[in-house]
Image: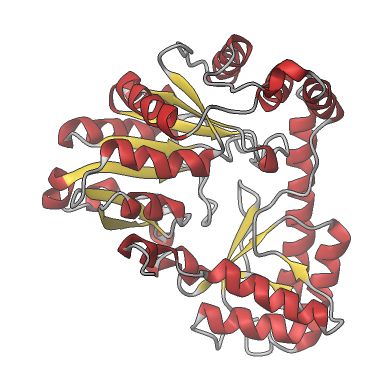
Length: 392
C-alpha cells in the first residue's frame, strides 16, 4: 500500500526521536529530566475538576454535542470582555475547537487552495506550517530575529510576496522564542492585512503566562482586527486543561462561519462534560491563574539563575512556559548539542531546528518540571563539563 504524498509532511519528527531517546535511557535505569514537550504538569483547580466530574456522571452529556452550549458561548464572550475589553457576538464570532492544534490545521483547509502562499513565522510552532502544507499551500517564512525583538518585521516582507499571500499566521507571546508583541504591532498587522488582502490568524495561547509584571493583550483589541482575521485562545496552559482539548476561535464572521461549516463535517463538537468544565474555568475563581503564573515564574528563575551561574548565559523570558536558549560554544548544531546534553546529563531539550531554519543555534526548554527537578538538571549540566567551552 502506498500512502498519500501529503504524509511526507508527517514522517516521524523530532519529538518522536526525543521520546525514543528517553525510553532507552529509562530502560537502562537512567534518570531523565524532560524539558522537551510543553505538556503542563500543573493540574486544574479543584472547582474545575469537580465541575467535570459532575458532568461526567450525567447521562445526557453523552449525546453528540453538535454545537457549543449557550453557557459556554456566554462564558467565552464575558471572559473576552472582562480580560481584553473586546465584545464578541458568540453566535457568529466564536466557535469552540478541540484544542488550538485542531483549529490551526482546519483553518487552512477553509482558506487555502493548492498553490496559495501562506506567511508563517520562523521559528514557529510546527503546526503553523504543517496545517497550510496539508492544504497544499506554499510557505513563506518570516524571520523573528533577535534584532527585531523576536517579532516579525512586516516591512521586511517583499511586496511581491505580500500581494501573493492568502493567509498569515502569527502568535504572541510566542512559542518558541517567547517574545511579546506590543499593541503597535497589531495595529501594523491590521494595516498590512487590509493593504494586501491577507487573512490573519493570531494564536494567543500564552496570554496569561507573563512574568515580572509584563502584560499582553489580544490581536482583536486592534481597531479593524475583526475585518481581517481571527484569534485562537486556549485553556490548556492557563487552566491546566491541555488533555481536555479546549480551545476557541474568535473574530471575523466569515472565517468563523467557514470553520464551523468544516467542523460540522469532521466532528460533532466538544464533549458536553468538557464544555461544562470550560464554563467552570472561565466563570469560577481566577486565583488559580495567578498561582499558575507564579509557579512558572519561580521555575524559570530556579532554572535560569542556576544555568547562568554555571556559565550558560540565557536571558529570562517575559512570557510563555518556555525558555529559548542559544546553544553554548563551541556547538553550532542544535540537534548535536541536544544529543550530547542528553547523553551526558539526562536532560532532554528540543533542538531549535525543529521549529524552522531560523531556530538553528538554539534549544527550547519547557518549564514543565518541579523546582527540585530544575535544580537537579542544573547540577547535572554544571557537573557534566558540557559548558566548559562556553563563553563565561
